Length: 265
Image 1 (cartoon, rainbow, N blue to C red):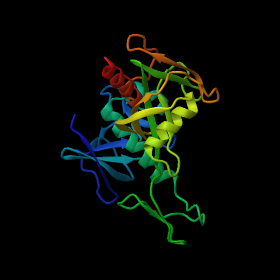
Image 2: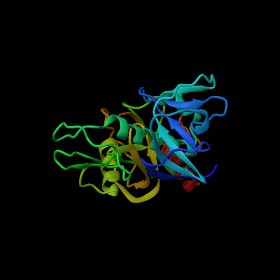
Image 3: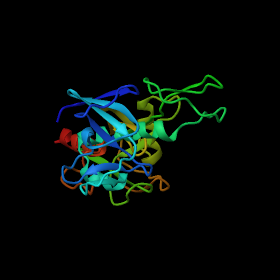
């Protein structure tokens, strides 16, 4: 598959061979069950409102709202039901699509005056004509950290997540905090460990709802755990040969766990 490149335009209109992504008012995305794709040929549909959100080779990809279709292969999927069909490429598509959809269609009023904002502009901004405040889409930075000690990695089960999955420590970056400070704080708060050798691994946009996930590895100074029971059900050390049920691909936590394990071999 050709690489999706982020691009936004309110003025460009789709050609017949361009592609569209459709999200309805229930925040469900249109999926082709036969072709297993979230992108659809524009020539087969009629939309009332389009926003260019990607360039894909010589084709543009447009976001639109709900479509009417009699095609039995086309269904709208909720975020919960789309997960089995996600790949690295489709996650990129879905993440940007949902976040821009929320911004365009759901966030339309000024927090100062309560007045309606202008329509979205080509730089993704909206404007309040009453108080002259400019708004941009919100993105929440979040860290993931795989903690290592003595050839093992630390995995936890969260109270607020799917309880059958063991994963890495995660948390939102606080105001005034660097990413490395956030890593150290989250580990200390959740399991009582001090860490060193904090290293960046990778990042991923995550549309549940609007996070930018940034993955790190770190070394624990010791292995004595003091678990925050409000946050965690359990925390344990694992070798690569005895991993529990971990988050599936294409989640960044899956990549981080596997990459860290491989680095210990």
